[in-house]
Amino acid sequence: MNKQIIFTPNAPAPIGPYSQAVKIDGRLYVSGQIAADLAASQAGIQAEARQVMVSIGEILHAAGMNYHNIVKTTIFLKDMNDFAEVNAIYGEFFSGDYPARETVQVSRLPKDVSVEISVVALID
View 1 (cartoon, rainbow, N blue to C red):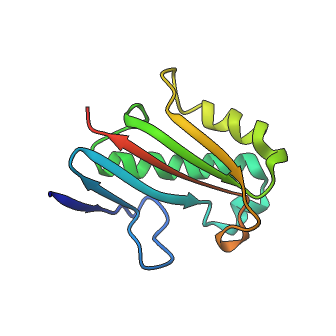
View 2: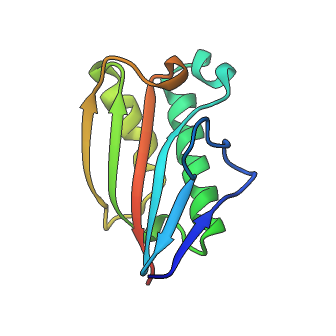
């Protein structure tokens, strides 16, 4: 087993005892990312979703990957009424060959944000 912890200062630092991402045996597991900047969450769901996707991109880049490598995502929403707006922002980061995905509504997220996204990526 070849386990590597991935960290980049270009994405929010973990707020607990976990890593931004772990790379192991050709897979990258990215922890749930939130818009840690409170100003982004106050700016609305679109700004928050965009910041989350940009942070995911920075973590992917630190691991030598990009959005094309993502095979699975999980989106957690505080309000399912935000689905269409988050979906539109999310879609801007892919050019087809979309990853598998589920989206679920949860009662609360860390730091009271409105969206959290985690991904699994594979090395080409």
